Image (tube, rainbow, N blue to C red):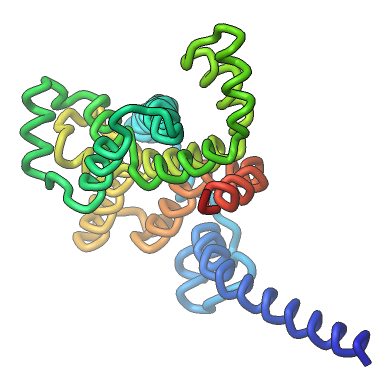
Length: 286
């Protein structure tokens, strides 16, 4: 009887999971098939599962644009440097706050939590960026958002789970906190580093509003802003009849969605196991 109830539960559970997965994956599949279809056929026949008239003209149009190549390089630079700096600053902040012997721990922790509840806002942040001379610089897209309080809390909880005996043994051997952090703590924290790194990378890759605010030089814009500009230009050209019928604003929109999502989709499978483990352990209250 118990075996039969387990089978019923498994059937219901798997059916529900498959249904939920289909609901979440179908919009992405629909966008991909639409972007690969010929506009005229797709709008008439409305194929949903396979492309109707396989067509890569939209992707070719996007890839050959010089601004796209430049924007891609800018986005890669912002994502790589931003993620590295974010992990560095987050670990430097989380490690001392995870130690009980840190003097002034409560004061600094409360000040950091205060910034999580009350932010400066767009205009004060813009004034600070301008005062630092970072306008029209890619660093304006990196430094203001280089550390997240939420990520710091997750990493701090993870560090608290590391046995204190390891750190005390290293201090007895004469090692300082910098050595302990880089040689002991961080090597044991690959899971949470991968999780927070993925969070930061996705945030930097999708940078849009800061680029509109801080960057006026078109050569320093990130790919998200450039693709949005191309989409607006294509829509205007379609309204005036000055665009080739092979490429329509709707096809352009679908292709842009795929292009912006593709790098993250390619990276995520390699970090998934670390992502789940890091979030699980980092969320356990120590």
